[in-house]
Image 1: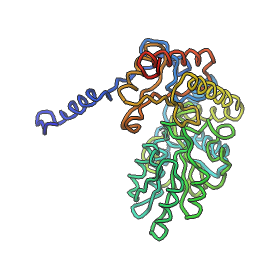
Image 2: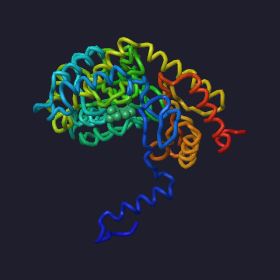
Image 3: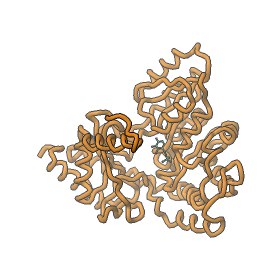
Image 4: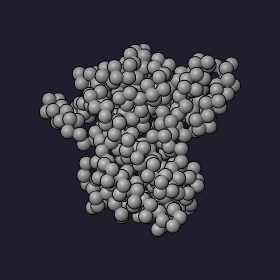
Amino acid sequence: MSGLNPLDPLSYLGEELAGMRAAGSYFRLRALESPCEAVSRADGREVINLASNNYLGLANHPRLKEAAVEAVRKFGVGSGAVRTITGTMAIHMELERKIAAFKHCEACVVFQSGFAANAGTVSALLGPEDHIISDELNHASIIDGCRLSRARIHVFRHKDAAHAAKLLEGLKDAAGRKLLITDGVFSMDGDIGPLPALVEAAGRHGAIMMVDDAHSSGVLGRNGRGTVDHFGLHGRVHVQVGTLSKAVGVLGGYVCGSRDLIDYLYHRARPFLFSTSHPPAVTAACSAAFDLLLEEPERIERLWDNTRYFKAALSGAGFDTGVSETPITPILVGEAQTAHQYSAALFEEGVWAAGIGFPTVPKGKARIRTIVTAEHNRAQLDRAVEVLARVARRMGILGA
Ligand SMILES: *Cc1c(COP(=O)(O)O)cnc(C)c1O
């Protein structure tokens, strides 16, 4: 890197980008030209979409769209302020009540995104004298929340609850509060966090237990209530984060827990206090999505049927799909460059699956990530596996 260029103080950005191009990690954004659906149109091509988080096919669902349009007609396009000024509409309160009841919790606060929910909550609950015990693969929004809190961060080996317990044990005489935090489902490998053992460890050491159910909302548990319901741990996880942006199909994040927790976050969570609330359309569409989760649990059945079918077909074709237990199924290919080239070649052949490499995943563990949805049909999944295998053989990822 050369030094400062006084004529262009941003010249280092061009050098950084050139470095990314040389390393093969530079990307161009692909633009969707249709709704997000099982078969989508992007960059002028019809492709089987295995890259979205639209697990239940709600992103373009008529009931959600109708609710959004109706809300625009009644309440306009913007809320006009942050929640604590005049930006709380009756429909915001209704959505929070609905989610709290759905999750069997006392109360709920909705944030503008799952990212804001995590970052805003961790940083509001803890301060510099406190301790956070965090899985090494936790999501970036948790990591940022931890950093913003200025608490001491103690990282435990992925899914290693014994390691987490040992770290807590080592802190038993330390001053300050302790927070034990994990993703419910990990977004890169599709594995499920060891919630029962973590809850046990947190309970023994008086730690706050927090789970981020972004990829489990609408996917795991009865009607998609998440990992706490999946493991039967109601009442034992103090802070449950969920997202409205993935299976719920719209945008937003939420925290469920005790009335005091939510009241406190109303007063102290910075994204809640300092950023404008959801527009009416988003709020109403989210609300309609929770009605659908209750009325049509068969969507979740279809998602899991497709997941089992697709995983079996991938294994049958000889792919290494790692440790996934959920609809997130990675196909491990080794080097980042290979993953990006594989993803690009697949797109040309009509399959959209994201290539992911270092630093998002460890070196040597680059992959393409696939996510099936409830809306894919068997013909689409068969076709996708056929293309995945054919291109992989051509590229030497699978043996001939
Ligand atoms: C996607 C994701 C988030 C962020 O959710 P958004 O609503 O998209 O901001 C947080 N945590 C995890 C684990 C995620 O996968």
